[in-house]
Image (cartoon, helix red, strand yellow):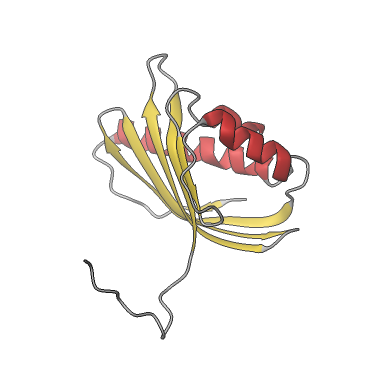
Amino acid sequence: MTSQEKKWKYKNEEEEKLAKYLIGLEEQALKKYFNGDMSGYKELWSKTNFSYFDANNDKRVDEHKQICDWLDKNLEGKMHSEKYEIVDPRVQFGVDIGILTYQLFADTNFVYMEYNVIEVFQKESDGVWRVVHSTWDKIRPYGKDHKIKEIK
């Protein structure tokens, strides 16, 4: 619900203000999401240039319509959480690009979520900042039995 925000060193006040704005957009989308309303992300994600990775899917989603259809079928009106936390949000900037990273912890009606989240924002031609790439990956440190395979 509230973000635990570290004080990252931004280049200037304008960059810091933009970071807070982008984090705020994400927080607004999450608030709706955890109340079963998927419209926040549907509006936040780019309709013309979007991709998505999720720990529960084995392939990348490359279309806004595809992810919206999936949200409608699986989560619309169903996802709920009274308690969630955004931890250590940080935005890194390039030219008309902002990369938001944070950890998300949520006790939902489906599962307890522990995700590393990456949202790549781009200022689109209409001047609106939208997410062009989103990754939600489960926090899974390597287990003791993890072995590195040889690259061939």
